[in-house]
Image (cartoon, rainbow, N blue to C red; front, side):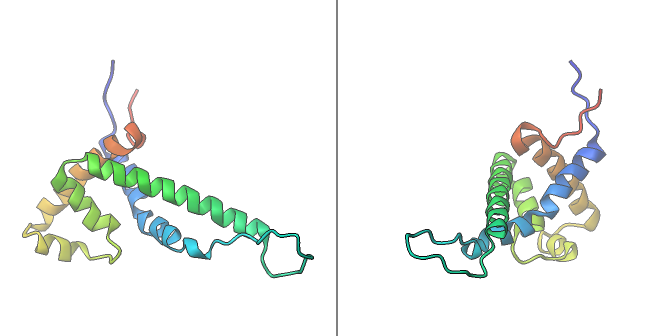
Length: 137
């Protein structure tokens, strides 16, 4: 069996997913805006609710919620320090600069980025059983 993988592509796959995590969180938190029309036996009145838009929003909400759950499960499977690093960098609601992050962690910039790279690879292996890993043939 060959267990070789493309580390750079694996990191990029993890980074692409995590860069969208805040958007997914915003969709999940705005779920109160997804409302379906009320069904009753009352006479039909016309409203500005478009059922296709509501359906698309409900699907996006479900997809975003499922992705966030998978991301959180992967972070929880990781080494605690690396999981915390990724959570601070990609998942915190208030985005902080990398400079702020590595200074608060008392790290040099190069050490911080090496740790981020290592954490991204570990995340890729933890996410849905290695779905983000770019295996080589």
